[in-house]
Image (cartoon, rainbow, N blue to C red; front, side):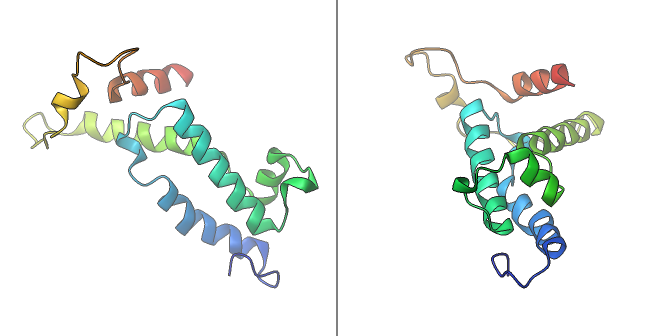
Amino acid sequence: MLCDKRTPLRLKEKVYRMVVRPVLRYGAEWWPINKSQVQRMGAVEMRMIRWICGHTRSDRIRNGVIRGKMGVTSIANKIRETRLRWFSHIRRRAMDAPVRKCENIERLDCKSSRGRPKKNWSEVIRHNLKTL
């Protein structure tokens, strides 16, 4: 349906917003996501939108024009929005609410790895709030 030329663009846009995009960003509200992952997701999104519109990269149409035609914003903005919505949900919950423990805590606290430690979720939230 998404690649059928007889299907109206408005219908394809609605299917993209309601089916494809939520699958693409599933669980992203609690990932400590980094820039390379955001870039990959943005590339996947633009490839999908170009495919839906029937354009290729060789048509040399800018991403902003294609997004405007479909009426969607970038996936990075939507991930930031859902992450901040999840953060507000976490802030509103009761202090005695049950919390799931992470099984991979010892992997995150590894002292032998080289370079900068991986970002945690609170650092990503702080960065998102600063960009707003």
